[in-house]
Amino acid sequence: MPSPENSRPNLLLITSDQHHWLAMGTRSPHIRTPNLDRLAARGIDFTRAYCPNPTCTPTRASLITGQWPSVHGAYTLGTQLPPDAPTLGEVLRKHGYVSGLIGKAHFQPLKSTPEYPSVESYPTLRDLDFWRTFNDKHTPWYGFDHAELARNHADEGHVGQHYAIWMESKGLKNWRDYFQKGNDGRTETPTDATLAPPIVPGAGYGWRGDMHWKLPAELHYTTWTAERTNAFIAEQHAAGKPWFCWSSYHDPHPPYCVPEPWASMYKPADMDWLVGDAHSMEGLPPPHQLTQIAKANFADYNEDGFGSHGYHSHTGQSRDQLRQVAAIYCGMISFMDDCIGKTLDLLEQSGQADNTLIVFTSDHGHFIGHHGLVAKGPFHYEDVIRVPMIAAGPGLPAGVMNNCPQTLVDIPATFAAAATGQVPLFMQGRDVRKAWQTGGGRDSVIVENHHNGAAVHLRTLVTQQHKLTVYRNRPDWGELFDLESDPGELVNLYDSNPKLRSAMFERFLQAELDREPSPQRRVAGA
Image (cartoon, rainbow, N blue to C red):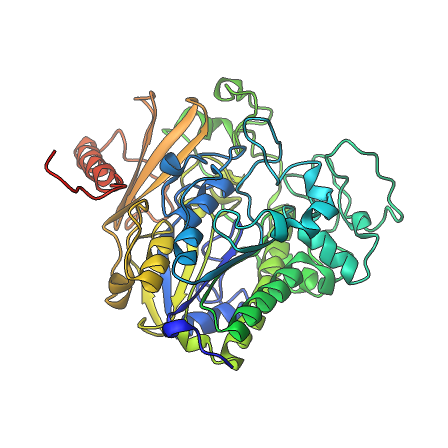
């Protein structure tokens, strides 16, 4: 078998979607993730990793650009990462690497316009002839030489693309019957209307009947992601090429449904360790308080007409319902873990494990009743901005835990440096391998959220001990928590501790200056 050119490290990024940082076997004995556990045993388990933005598109774009959303431009859901944005894959291609993306991309919106054309939109999503020739006609795409994509979460109607082609190749010609109707304006009459989990009106976000999906596990997109990830890795290894692969899993993002045996793996009665509690929102910004009111009016915060994820009433789900959600959520994670194990097995069996830098993480977290909230939104509690993260590979210590703040923006910079010896100038992230080797990280990290024009625009600074959140043009709003004495984030110190608030504002300003990019080197005095 040929050896990779110059024995440069292969690069493997594995991501989940909307994954609460506690829902890992290294965090809790109540969930089974044996393969992520063995990856942690080979490397570093980070307890304080943070996403750059707690929604999908912004963070996913950051994972290939090494930039914060305010710089790369895909600042919220429904926006597009510019097709000419500089990316990690482009850098690696110039150094002989082959780059592949398998799974969820979400760099582009579900709607295509003349100004912002999107291939991740209707009707293209379900145009399988387009996707059969995608890699011949449209790559490199965002720096990826090869891409196999699927846009849906669970049984959403956004299914199609390469995943649908794969289902048909496996003999599942009626795959549409297992999913909700697509949003492409077509009328689809299912062959068997009992195969797609029923939507239950009023039951809560992402609720699907009894949540036991009849789609066979061997035809699930989680299985597809692992199978196609392994095919890409095996092909590059056989060719002797160094490779970068983003293995991008879709779960445990709602809707909540998963096939057996994963749907019955966890009992709702055992889920109190993951289900959070509501509390008084007094002293917090008005939208926080409105979430705890049935039929609350959020019109003042929806200036662009598209609404804001999370700016709605979060009432209506009982604790028993949240326990049911948590049980399926954990089943989705354990299913994903099982498939991740197949890729770890391939690396070990092919002799690539010791020469592959692997990072596992998630694009953002998730609320299951935490602070009285569900799913996600512009509420920068740890539950939604803190993410699981593991790193293993050449030069990194094994079996250690790191409690220093980390940002996902550093991952592409670290990958680039490992492959080429330097961080590209366009990246705001840092090569943090030395910090990881010595148990370090950053002094602070920033989390952005510019979700809805000027109405929903906030930023958060997280240090080792404190967290400050500020809002654009809203001087009376603010959050300040001491994460050591108040890990549950129940006591807002923003008004009661002006000295600490002032000190954190100064640190915030320095952090903002620190992350300003320098996109070119100075070559002359004038």
